[in-house]
Length: 499
Image 1 (cartoon, rainbow, N blue to C red):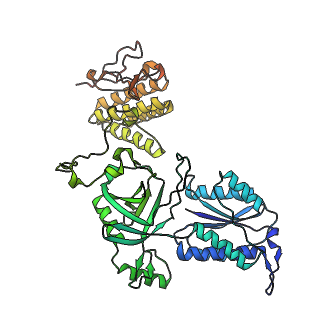
Image 2: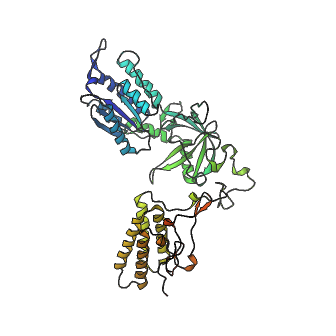
Image 3: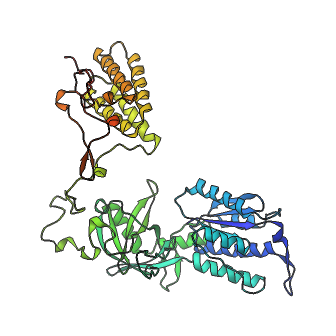
């Protein structure tokens, strides 16, 4: 996870620290020395970590944005000026803006701050007790500062090395970021669960069967190449230094099971189920960053015998060869997963969802493309128009109906002279019906159809029960011949196609 280093550059950090037998240091020099030690360790052992440097006093300043270039971070430590009083609140506001702008609100971030003990204790209380304070044991000196930062490195920035096993094949890997202990809330005496350093693959399953499961965290799995003497050669991470490039070249010539597994999962479209601990599983899969680059990833499921309900208990899964007949069929055209429920729930229906503006724009453009091809695309035109109309009424998005109606009227005026006369007739009628529906009146909130055989009411199914929708949002299929609206259950239709 990203790291933000927040350093106090107020006048209080310029106070001298007397060290026997050496020159006089200031507090900011000790802090810079400890951070330099941290950055050097991360540059060697934690290269994939994104780190930012923020300094603050009464105001705050972003010295170095999120980067993996630790030389830039170390240079910034020697170019800091002194300012006025300390105000941690303004720095936290700045850190919040920086993290949300770069990573969003769903990505956890580590905050390393050099400030007074009272402020840091209050900060941990605001974070629901999550976090830890490291203090210097003994007097202020370089040795004690190094010891304190060493504790921080051991806790948060030590790489997690493991052995990936599949039968008699093994590979030394690094998992990044390091998996955090997980505490099960349901237990009476919760004990943090830690994943094993031996990751054993227990089976493989199709991506379509496992779908998109809920996971606790996602991690990058990197192969660690070892030479014949057992010394570490490289982790598969590229670097600009010549020594690192030569080490990576040597690592690329050594066969590694991790590379074989990654390529196999990518080609076959499968995932590997891996045992993390007692009744704790995860999955290994290939995830593409771009068209030419992909990585081997590991996602952790929640601990328990049945983390994914549609697969059943993990202990009861077995190889296909043990089954009497192939559960995927002879032509591989079916799947035993997931178990289909008896009742089809309302949330399992195909509904229109507009999460981003681009989705709504695509639906409107599809209607306009079909409108320009009338009357050949009449069926598709009314199908797409019905779908958008139904969703707009369900969401209460009445302005959308009026906007689409205006677009259809404009398309009608732009029709060429060679256009079929029925095209203008259909566009005009559809626009009129959308404008009537945009008023929210129950008589005009029906959806468009093409023939009398489509006249039917649509019930709203909610958890297996059929509920009558409210009058203002009643939706019904409309016939081709528009009868006089007498009640909300009657239909209002588009213009009937002429022969």
